[in-house]
Length: 176
Image (cartoon, rainbow, N blue to C red; front, top):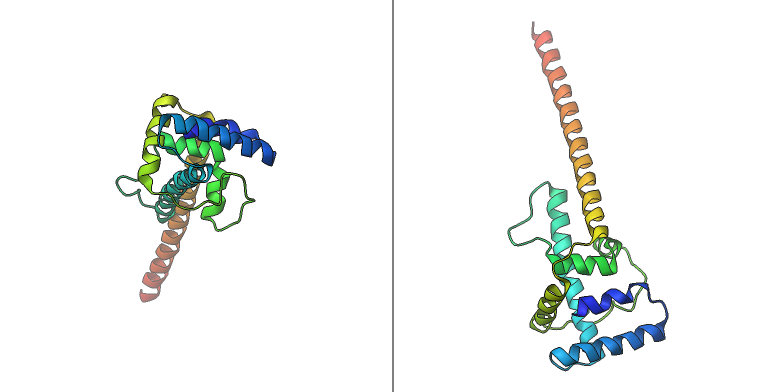
């Protein structure tokens, strides 16, 4: 439910408009779950983004190391929804240590995960497990980049093997 409500904030710019919308989010969520303040709901949102960011960082580390991700580390629909809302640039810039301008959804403290679990489950049900085209394009782009990196690595390995072969041939010729 939180994710569904935050989707509409993607294009909001004014501070007052965002503050008003957080009040609307709080009212909607408090009718279906535990009563929380706006700050507590923002903390929950931050925790959800942090969990997704950690997954993406782990997947990126595994990809750069040339291995496959450890079991249990995969993006689920909630992660895809979060990425769709804040954009992949947000996560990749943070993972690379670059600062991104603050937006109204970031900069909040931690909330225990069990508070957010109910919201994630409600969001999954209300979203009906729908796919988001932009995220699919991002995944395709990432796969293409990974394939290009693998091809470059294979080319470098072939070049190294050729150099080693040439050295071996030269040594054999010198011994004769």
